[in-house]
Image (cartoon, rainbow over all chains, first blue to last red; front, side, top):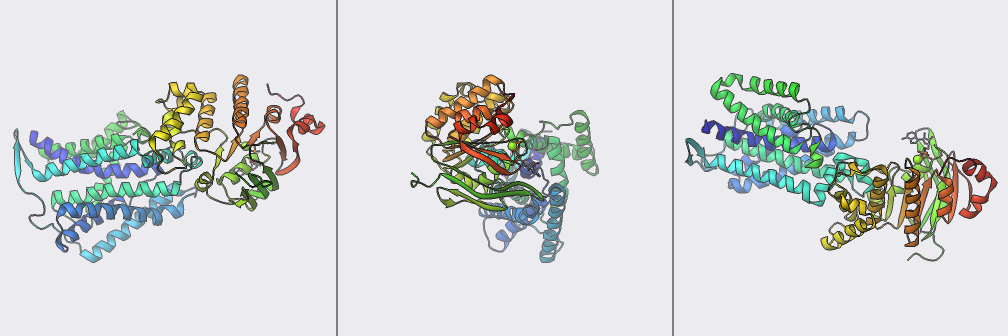
Length: 292
Length: 248
Ligand SMILES: Nc1ncnc2c1ncn2[C@@H]1O[C@H](COP(=O)(O)OP(=O)(O)OP(=O)(O)O)[C@@H](O)[C@H]1O
Ligand SMILES: [Mg+2]
């Protein structure tokens, strides 16, 4: 039981990171960036290349990959979203162009690395474990949970306390009202993509490390979970997304332990369905990004 | 400040169109430093379109906007704000979900990327002193304020942005008579403090009372202009905008 909780928190913290990035862009633009999962996947590869070929220690490769993810996010905005901004159908058009971009990026990675699973070399991450109560907790799990919590706190601080955060929330509420306050809306959107994709990149690297598994299609299942987390958390709510991410991780782990691994996604999405029936606005209501 | 003879804001032959709809047809007007100039006219005359073009919310089809003689035509809105062109839009467009204080902080830091925080705080506190209703409820969402209070917040925000020219779009719209009076008093107050204002209004009587100079806009054309006191006495203005008008 304790073991399951630890494993669930561990998985859930990665989902939460991924979904926070997803939710940030959704809250600001009311748009789903379906290229988020491609950034997640590419940055796992980036960390892998840095560790395997440039012999970087992972604690140096992680921030580099996160930075690269942020920059890639700004490119995604430029290519897939900005040219469509202002069109009456920009939401659906952006959705489609981001799917297209994700497909292209995935194909490029497939071409370059091949379809096989790549692994981090032994010794990349600490392999020791410690005993807490009845649970065996690996140092890696502790580190991943700590990184996720630190990034969540950092994001909260950014949104609540900084000039950039205030401006992001202003654009999320009303681009026009932000504009008359002197906010360069395109720049703030670009910055939101940077932050969002940096979180997605961190999730990708940590996911790759956690399962020691980096593959071109690794973003696919996480993408669906991320969507579920946005809805479950309450469409644009940052605390909601964090909470829902952790809840989904726990749910999955307990399903595997008690029911069987083939029911993992069925139970997760069954609960999503149930929550939507009981609480149509998600766990923490809509638009709480604006209060974050 | 500005060279003598050069108006603070000058609009030359401004044209604004939405597709085939010509909202503003080659209008020209000037606002001298320290003046309150009003632009009055009926619904759909093109008043909001004029302000939007000056503030950079939309691109004019033709003509020029000059600030102290420098061409600022077609600057995007955030660049216009950098230049000191500050708009209080129709309907106020406050950020309803953010706190009253955050609305003011956003304005205080609008033109200064990294202001000394103490200085910024002092300026925000000064606005709370001017508008005690806002100070008492600073942590509440701005959307919880009444219409009149939201207009106060919009004014406070605009003043925190250190405007060189303040563009006000129907600040009295939708307010109860007592609050309408308060809004015009406020325009007079900031006039005395030296602000330069271009005031768009449908309440012609009060707008003419608080302004130095006036322009009348109809269907995209300026049809009359002159010192406000003269226009208030003009029989055409009285017939169209003052006679039997429904204002307070
Ligand atoms: N976004 C738009 N798209 C198309 N036409 C528009 C748009 N905005 C305004 N117009 C048209 O342009 C003309 C001028 O509108 P504008 O809002 O500038 O007038 P106004 O003088 O501010 O009117 P009001 O007193 O009602 O605010 C009107 O005919 C209006 O229908
Ligand atoms: Mg108008």
